[in-house]
Image (cartoon, rainbow, N blue to C red):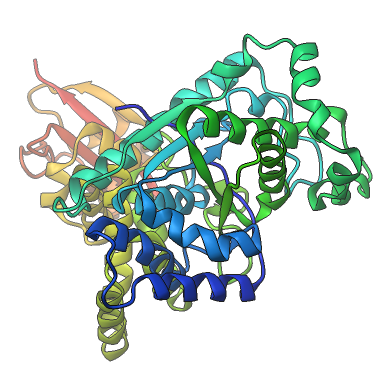
Length: 480
């Protein structure tokens, strides 16, 4: 399955959004002659707005009148782009992917565009200083990681969330490096640069804010909007792409693409914007103390992703259910009613965490998250016994993981000393005797106790050792 990458776009007035929705309602009026998939496309704009996924459209007037008709006339191609500045997407990027999934479910074709070329330039939007330059090797490695994120999510969505009675659109995951690597700078500027005007480029908000900053703006960053505009043009030429999806901070870049295509081809293209999702404290979603919640398992485990959404404040959970899940809005309302009746059960939080984890990591990822939750917070021996080496290491990321040879007569004292969990000599012995050591969630106060299978050594060959409140050690036993 081919796949491509997306980018965030722009924002327009509330008036434009309301007008666009009125058009969507008009085309869904009783007696409409459009076929079923066309009706779904018309209702898509209204549905996405109600969920909060779609904010506005651009250009204002044309999109109000033409975009609903375009979406119903035939399957369209929609793209969104991601620059691989890291080796994984994080939850702050997830809404853009979900936007593409909604369009694909309505029968439209989607392109996820990886910026293998533009990542080396650096998007100045929303930045107070220039990004650190990435080498070609790092960009290539990051591109692989993000491609894996996108492909996995699309596969999970098709398998677990798609109504099979509706035809899906196609998916392409592309890398813009493929159309820049053979272009010379003089040739590119001669052909493309002549269609851009300095006054217009300088007026962009992203440019103005950087020019007023202490560091200013480099020529490299200034040209970013030219490259993103050309990406839209290239996808329009090759894939017939007429719609770009993106975040509100990308307005200037999206406008550049629209103006360039209109000048060169005389054709109308459109932008649909996704709101920038923030927490109740105003921080970008997915970032806490500078640490993102990633979508690739090697950076953020399914358990950690599950817990992130499970711990969202009550004020955010209804909005996030609408944004990050595919639950019908009626079902979301029912969940919220149940939550208000008995907040202690946290039914809405649990459903939110489960739906997002299943989308990102599949059924197996959700089952892993639940096992880890039971093992850590509910002291479940059964859950511990079912966990893999990988899950235990994910759950206790800071815990030392050691392989030990299981010899006959191995005692609690032996394993604690071999794991360097207690000091040598009388002090370590006393720590066990005084109840400071726990094995598989059970306190052990007999240093000379021989390890017993299924109690001290689980059926998966693992032992979880804890000394004090937070000092964990994981032991993988090897047989003689």
